[in-house]
Every structure is written in C-alpha cells, then in structure tokens.
Length: 463
Image (cartoon, rainbow, N blue to C red; front, side, top):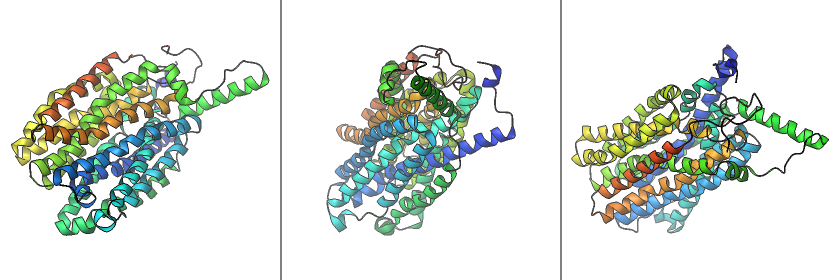
C-alpha cells in the first residue's frame, strides 16, 4: 500500500464529499435509532398500561418488554436480506429502503388503537409493527457504518467510523427528551389518552429529512472498486480468458470465508447490546416502577448520559486510531464488568444526583465505548464483498439477546424478590464473555478495509 492510500483526503472536494457521507449516515441512523428507542421507552412507561391493561402491573411490564424484544427477533432476517442487497447492489440504495421501512412502521405505531378500543388486536398489531421496525433496522447498522468507513482515509477510519455511531446516543437523547417533554407538558391522563403518540408521529418529519440527505450521496469507494473488479472478472470469464468459479450468495461466502470471525464478532457484540438495554430500557423502568421514584428522574439521567455519549463516540474513535479498536473495545467490556453492580447500588440509593451519575458513568464507559469503535473493528474482520452481510449478521443476531434483555431482567428481578443483583450478575457474565471474544480477535485486518482494494494481491491475513 502506498502512502497516498493511507493519507487523509487533501482536496476540499474530497473533504466535502466525506462530510456529506457522514451526514447521510448520521441522519438516517438517527431516525432509525430514535424509532427503536422510543419503543423501548414507551414499553416501560406507556405500553404496559395501554396495550396490556388487563394484566397486573408486573405482568404488564413483562408483556410490554416481550413486545419490545420481538423487534430484535426480526433484525437478523433484515440483516441477512439487506446485507445481501448491500453487498450485491450497493450500500446507498439499500439504506434508503431500510429508512423507509423503519420510519413508516414507527409512524403507524403512533396511529394504533389501544386495548380498550379493539381488545387483543391492539397488542397483536403493536407486535407486528415492531417486527417490521426491527426488520428495517436489521439492515441499517451495517450499511450506515460502512458508508462512512469505506469512504474515509485509512489512518482515520476509527474516528470517522465513530461519527455515525453518535446517532445511537443522539437517538436515545432525542427519544428520551421527547418523552420527558411530553411528560412535563401533559397531565397523566392526557399522556395516556393521546400524548404518547406524538413521539411516534414525529418520525415522519425525520424520515423526510433523512431521505433527502441520503438521496444525494455517492456509493462508497471500497464498494465501487470491488464492484468494478468483480465486473472485470465476469467479463474475463465470459471471454474465456480466465476460469471463474460459480458465484455464491454473500451469506454463503461469509460463512465459507469467515467462520471464526463470525463467532468472535457475535461474542464481542453481546456486552454492548446487553449492557445498553439493562441501563436504558430496563434501568428507566426499574427506577420509575420498582423504586417508585417517578419517570422524570430516570429520563433525566438517561438524557444527560446520552448527551455526553454523543461526544464520547468521536473521542473513542480518535483514541482507537492511535491504540487500536480492540484495545478500546476491551476497555469498554472491562468497564461494564466493573460498573454493573455499582450501577444498581447507586440507583437503589434513591438520591437524584447519584441516580443520574449511575446512568452517566455506566452508559458512557461501558456500551458507548464499545459501540463507538465496533463497526470499524468489525469491518476489519471481513472482506469487502461480504462486509455488509458480515457486520449485519454479527450485529443483528447478537441483538436478539440484547432485545430480550429487558424481559430477562424483569424476570430475574421477579425471581430475586425485587432485588437487582441477579440482573447485575447476568450483565457481568456477558461482559466477561465479550472481553474474551475480543482478546481472540486477530489484530491483523483482511484486505479491503486497509487498501480500498486499490492493489490486487493477497489478504493481509488468510481466512
């Protein structure tokens, strides 16, 4: 690889194009994370009372969190389907489709009648739209991250790859902020009657903005060059100048070439998704319901934590360009292991300052630190032609456990007689598993993420 390949873009045009790509990735990801997080927030505060009103409070919370988890079951399918089209058709067009699907489903949730109006059909329709929402988000993560990473200069890919990741914290902040505002403006009766719909209906505005931005970006450099190389190989094969093996589906190529990487990526991802849902979705419900401290306190704590998380992502990415993504990820896993018990201790104190501190510190030193460098680390593990599928598969299949975590946590809470220590132990075990997985990740990247496929040759490491 020559030095020019590794240097940052020099011309104003190249810098402007990269900034446009980052804006497109961030805007779309923001909408989709907002869509997903408002459902999680509403599950603990609203849906248990409006869509499962025939159950007692504890069973209602478990049922609402079960519906929340349903969306994660659809995400692997979305990851496989959109990963296929992202690797074959392109990152840009695939991301436009995921945006429309997720945003549309969220808007329709805001129009749903409640259990009081249509009975059992209310939770059925809610679960159906949650499945559609999850299917769309299943293809978002891999593409949004790759749009930026595959367009960024080699030595800065940790930093640039972390910028779209800010959308997760921004999505939490926006979702939590909108619900906090509704909670402040509306009375309890108004919020339950119609105020809860506003956060979901607002997604229509964000959908339009996200589409306008994404329609005006170009395909990534890595994918364009891989596609050109692939087209040339097909032409040579048609002319009979070379013998070309039969082309397999991206998911088949992925499992043939990267079995070890798939397992390690799945394991590495677990700590981030499980801890995030323990802190956010379950943590808010635990403070407001189990500790009976009201909705305002946990919403405020998560609002502050997610605001800081927006700045934490580029900082972690910048550091990872100097010490490596694996080192930063391992630090996040260890922090999660060490902080998960103190997190609940601080929540149990009932002190407003300590509760907010618990959300702030645990969220940013744990899942946010891992999430910031996750796509860049994962991208280095897969070849360009299967990278969208690789990232999507690893991310979305591990997300199943993450999505079921609020349900698992609520069940463990009930088994523990209302004490959160079984929940904390669950999070600690998962954090240790992820740390071991990252330790086993090969630090040497495969060809494609480092050289833009600009030079044909052997992979940096074989698979």
